[in-house]
Image 1 (cartoon, rainbow, N blue to C red):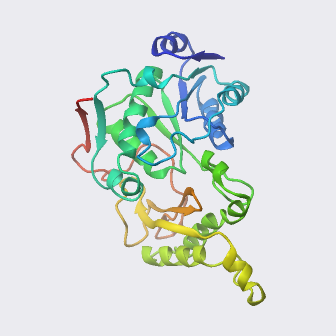
Image 2 (image 1 turned 60 degrees about the vertical axis):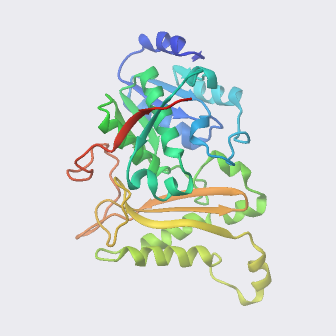
Image 3 (image 1 turned 90 degrees about the vertical axis):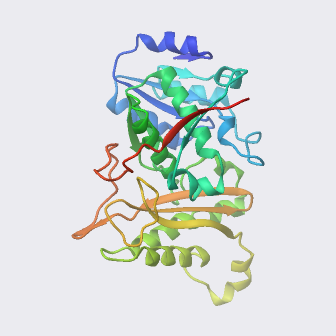
Length: 325
């Protein structure tokens, strides 16, 4: 496996790889969810590349950029064992040299609601780093996880708007045995918080169970919210004090949206997705579950990158702007 530290080194290492080339971008601190991206890429592509780069532009003021877990030696070992041919692991100055003045902004609910509202500027940082990585690696297929559903929709949007020659493939969320969605930030959880954390997924399952054909989105949200605020298995009258002493979620949002546009939905449809974000202690957790239905019953959300006709606005939503550093 080749580890490239500069754009020039990466391009030289990637140039001769057999095609198609799959690409799994990461910020390191790898877990089985990241490695599932590599696994999916190996299943579809002749060669696989990955990146390890903690991107500062997608972290806001007061967020955990400095504290974000880093263990490059372990990350590189895992990627090599997984069959990755080339890893692009640049320093910040290689990606954002002095005078860097460009940003990419996707307009509308995709970047202004939910995650976008909770983390202003986050998706601008995602858009610029993914665009730069695609320009360096030039893959045929980009593999992203479904857990970051809004990020996935944003990337698909600007890839389409900018006519970038890459397919965006979604990979299902990888979970711990108790249902907690895998995340590098799970390392922040205390033992007590880790015990409670799977309740977020259980709440989404409760919401999905309420989502029959013709059901209103508010019923799904109400069921999920009630489940999140209730102890797992109900409240034992003999254990009230213990239940009240458990770490509690602080819900940021819980909504049903169209998974392509992230416009809130009133009734469930073929692209409905339940999304949630909540804080448990100092740790921010996100999760998602398809609640897509058709008149003849529920179906899983498709992972084909091609969106149905009418899923996007007729006008491009993505703008590229220069700014004074």
